[in-house]
Length: 325
Ligand code: ACO
Image (tube, rainbow, N blue to C red):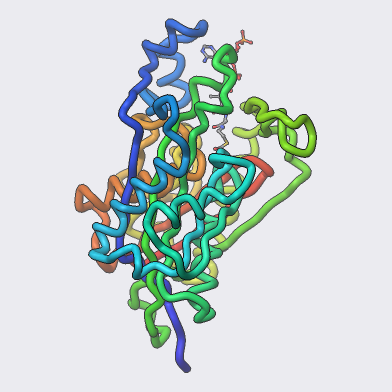
């Protein structure tokens, strides 16, 4: 039977130049480096410059991913961009990236699933490639969360940062053999009963303002590990991959304690876990491709490796993906 697999061709990332350290934050709100490091593992985060918007970050990451893939913008016919901090209410931030790359064919659109956005965008692109609708996709996670933070609220402003990451996927004929490269499985979940635990208190249709991020941190923490591990167990059941047989675990980078607790519950060895949250905080939809780019650039993730992605965020939304690199 003829099949198509979505194969990773390239990875790229971009972080804004300005770094905000925990010591800088301690000058702004009643907090300390010790408190932030102990509770979250975060040491610094990057903040977009005045006038630097989400599509600028995304465009830089997309160009880096194309260079890594050895491809030209014209080779791309699908852009799926995950963000909760778009440049404008509309058009989609993805079309600004498309225009910035000089692409005039194919399709470009945004998806919104907050911190799970990258996994949702990846699953969307994978299904379009597998169906034969498109040939090569840029899957981007890009955020400027600094613009929706209440910088006087120490319970949230210390947690987040700005950044972007991108993957190039290519539709490749496959036979279904277990060792073929490509996305092996994706699993997406949502449960809107939890929508008030992590949300932005403004919006186009409600307040006509942008609003600020609000979160019941302990409640999010309470659900996170269970939801993450459930959807990873779904991925294991669908593929036969196990905590022992996978090579790399690249989780959403929200909080070191959530990452460690999830890996521990699943029996994934600490040396297989990619952690970058210390350098960029929680960049929402950008965090997984930022972590992937880091582990790809330093040679940890190699061709043939099995890579497990996972995210959980506002909604709640959560999801997993298994990729043979
Ligand atoms: N600096 C110093 N003290 C602080 C700070 C701060 N930045 N923020 C809160 N505190 C204080 C609180 O006021 C409280 O003080 P009190 O005891 O006098 O009332 C004390 O620290 C403990 O507060 P808690 O909220 O109970 O602290 P907790 O140990 O739960 O840690 C945290 C808070 C880090 C937010 C944690 O709940 C968490 O990680 N939650 C998950 C949230 C998350 O990661 N969200 C990201 C988005 S969702 C996602 O991406 C999965």
